[in-house]
Length: 386
Image (cartoon, rainbow, N blue to C red; front, side, top):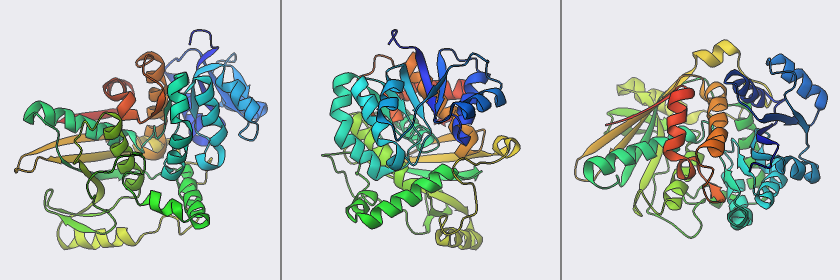
């Protein structure tokens, strides 16, 4: 899209995560990008705060003004949006991208809304060439690409993919973001108004229209995992990550197999202490209190930089053979690592997979190995398998 003014517009640059994304683009010396938001004054303040060049372009747009969103889309190759909850503020932006053939990345963890967008805009995006990619942060890139990495190794070693893969979060220092909490609350509110949403939220194949695979573990109860010989507890991001992994398999023509089974849990510990920890984690309701960051807020620079995560993926072949993969990140998952991941995803769409077909994609299905390479080289992630 050489005729467009910018490669990337960061929409929501005045919010906490959007500011981190913009700051990252400044640090790596990105070219042909702009900052967008509702207030020109606030954009100017953030531009100066993050040390962006004084001539960094600023674009005003508002989720309540579809014409401004359409104008924004027509000026850029990729819209990178951190303006959520997306079910409240994302409808018109996705529609504008689909209509204008503009690529799109977000941090969405709202499966019911994602399915609505797939139903409404996938065909249109295919027709216009718009490459729309949801969930380009901690949910769900490390998990999506982690499974992809494991399955590539399994095919190389065994000649076929693993029919059973377990995602096990071993370490996660630093929580999920205030935007994620707001999205969860908005999803629950929507489900209360429309009970049919509950069926989507509980369906592992909610994002694979026309395809349903085998029964999947619920991941809702503590359990002793004999494969890793440790107690495991429910993982709050599993309901979105697992759906994205199944959509990747679906979009890649069932590259992981039509019988693919996948779940995610947190590793709680060993023995009786591990069991007690797993049971305690299972009782925690992260939405029950108002503590933690609100949308637009977040941890300090020190807290972001001392955060990290480590995720083990275990592949089981069914005959006793096992293969593992590990993904690590060098910043807190909800902010420090997420801001780098979504920025590199946007750059990947511009520079590495510019010829990919339009449609509503997952990171793993459209960017796969090129994105993984970027994240290893630039964003502090590691991917190992063997």
